[in-house]
Image 1 (cartoon, rainbow, N blue to C red):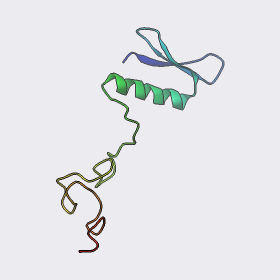
Image 2 (cartoon, rainbow, N blue to C red; image 1 turned 90 degrees about the vertical axis):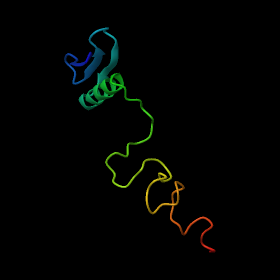
Image 3 (tube, rainbow, N blue to C red; image 1 turned 180 degrees about the vertical axis):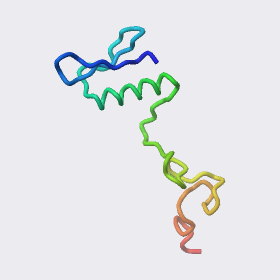
Length: 91
């Protein structure tokens, strides 16, 4: 893990940098933001790709995104929603 964090002298801020290349990724940032940036840089280094959408890992019963997955029981074949919606009300 080449990314490191170092406290700046005489001020309560930190610097995030690559210890192998010396490239500074963040200068004069708070401790919380520096830790967050370290997690981000290390995740990207290990293959994580930011998608811009929030994660759904901790929510039970969620397939992620809109619409249901095709194999889930009680769902209308991958279309999402309940059977009483979208054209089925008149049957």
